[in-house]
Length: 199
Image (tube, rainbow, N blue to C red; front, top):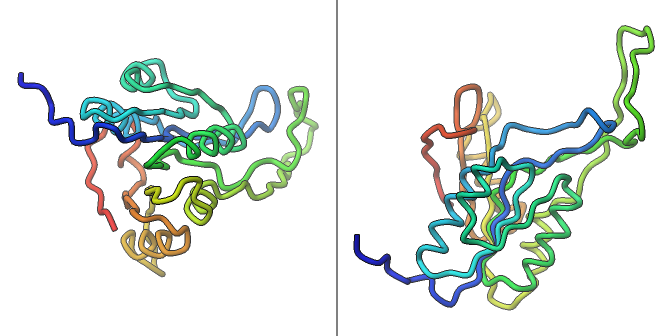
């Protein structure tokens, strides 16, 4: 096999991947089904093509870390940890790729001990909004001329299509590129082939 074209040589690329987890207590959390596989493949390809890469993985498996192993790998759990790691990476990077699935909300209170059943049939969990990492990095560039790329996992509904929601998100967040991905039951998460639209 011939050597890959080194068309990304000299570029520094920071890629976030995986899904953040927000603790309810030491046992339970709010999360999502993102594996980080997409971001790890991007990281491996960027490295193969000559870029220096930093991979910030939120709750990713050993196999995903192994795939991204040519990068400087940073592992995080929560949205706050991801935000701090990506802020630091963005001060270094020419290109910022936010492919992580970030929790929009977190529990207002994270309990220090496991919450027991109280006898009540229902329980209310109050959520507060998390920081919008992509919008923050896009609207306040850490380096001049920096390219910021986001991901929009959308399902579409009666009010709009997957593409329309993705386009709206790109404008709202201020990203230079947005990768729009249709998600749902049996679609996308894990090692499932996917089709994306880039705007």
